[in-house]
Length: 510
Image 1: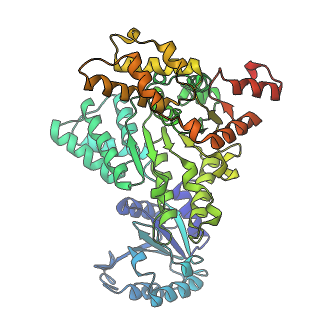
Image 2: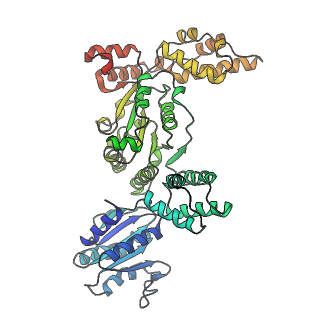
Image 3: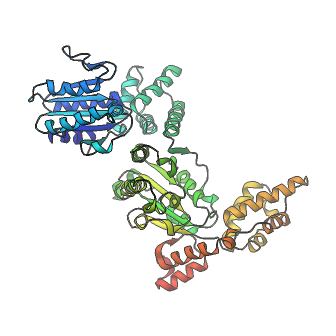
């Protein structure tokens, strides 16, 4: 249901007080005015603290610097007169006992009158005593059709008519921006060149990066890693490659739904984060990194508001990849946290979105400790698949050494005994292999020569693998995966054989 449809439904149902959190005040008021015209040409009154009521000659300025008087104005109008009262920045006054009481009194009165209060705010802050009075309604960022209309309007002023394909690219780049930001960035581009040019797409993308940074929740992450940069994990790579075109229009016509996401489980340093970056690069999608810890704010309702903001921005930028690193640390043991249920509400909002989202946001969540994740997170329907990323075996370690040495020494990777290196580093994770190479480079650099195979082995001998210091955790993860609770990311591993025996299935079925 669109915003207009839902808003008009609330008007007809005589919901007395509607709370809308948005930074697009002008666009929202235009949308409300259109709804009012469709609902029998209802009168619309707009109030703010500085100017009071505006637009009506008889009442202009009424209620200036007096929010209580702004509410009393509602009772001045005839009971049968349909009207919408837009109250700007009214969240700042909701903690006042007089305002709170008056709102509750009006809520009872307006149930029998065709009048509606609309509280417009840049943030969601609903006091507990008004939670039953105020109905919260989301106002989404502009969709592609609205963006196209705005872009065409701006370009018509320049007298230029861009090609349809270029216009599609502009609209796609503008998704996730507010109408005001779209106007500003396009005006900047037009002022620079006199018209919109292909090079100006970078201006739009930079504006998008800026707004995402300003949320302080999501980070626009550059994804340069390739699928080929991942050593091993053949099953996982095959799964990803098969879904490379799943975001295309051709896939929709075929009847395929948008891929939902992946949960990657395994110990630290096994390539889970690298995989998230490689997915975005391979699918040519923007990568957004979510710091779950930043969702939690100190004010009542702030955490839930940030969660909704995160979802809104991610969906506006779709198709995209949303990377949530170490999700287990954010939601572990939330039932026992003494935060008044904030973590529980944030978690509930998040997993409900995971299950019900229809937008092409591909979620890649990583977890090190599966035992601390709530069972609801692991239920089918949240993610397309759960993969267990274990320690690399000898063949995979060899592939990892090849990837790193081809990058570090692209002209002479054959100077290193990769088979020996893989054999001599049992239980090493990909991150520990990379660290041993860095340490070997320090050894060679300090002696004014290139590093050798022996330097790498010496560096590796100084590293105590996590597999030896966290044996219990790793064994728990292996047993959990062996019980059939996750697919294996690697094709050749002893754990795979165990799982095959338990499930009595041929390899092609796993």
